[in-house]
Image 1 (cartoon, one colour):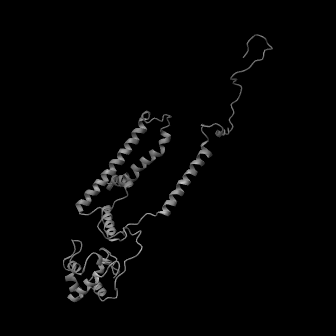
Image 2 (image 1 turned 180 degrees about the horizontal axis):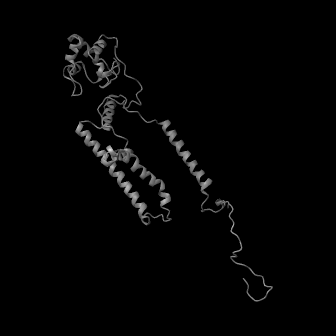
Image 3 (image 1 turned 30 degrees about the vertical axis):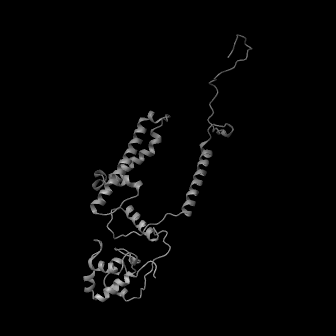
Length: 292
């Protein structure tokens, strides 16, 4: 740039096109010298995030070791139940019941639709490259997000409602209600409320009594197991805390609330006498959590 016609005047070029642009690697500056400014994502920011993640993970591990999750009562594989996944899988559970996601369309429902959904989620950062961060300025992304949330809430609610209808039609009680009732019953008796904190196993009282052989001969072991811990039927260890001799004899002769048929005739057919059955009822009434 010159100001006169003097040939000796110094000429300064501005934006000279003869200067080639450098193509080498430019080391990112250390932003720590500029408070409030950004910093390099790799490795500075990433390392900090990783360290925070490690601290949170260690915290979770300490909590799980210090306070382990309680175990509920043992599952009964022979019981007639309606399977139900955890709440965060309910929407998928209900989705797989839809006509075009099950039956002849099971491959489409499990692989096709799910593949498109998760593939779209992975490609979202590459398809939506706009710099706008306000959700109402990004109608496509915001609409898909709201649609997904509505679908998850609707399917989850439908799954839970359908589960309750199935339970009512089959005359069953929801597992969470059964557990609460069992825990309340045990709490009132001073017994453990879960199998996770059960410290002492209830023993068989006078297991050498001849009534034990009558118990096996009568076929009681098919439902209550030889160790009396229960198979398809409930455990009889500690049954004396719930029923006395007369109540047990009545159950043997008449059954119990539709859950257990009368066993008197089958016991007689198996070779037991009335005296044997009376001794068996007396022996069962002595099966208590703490023998006296």
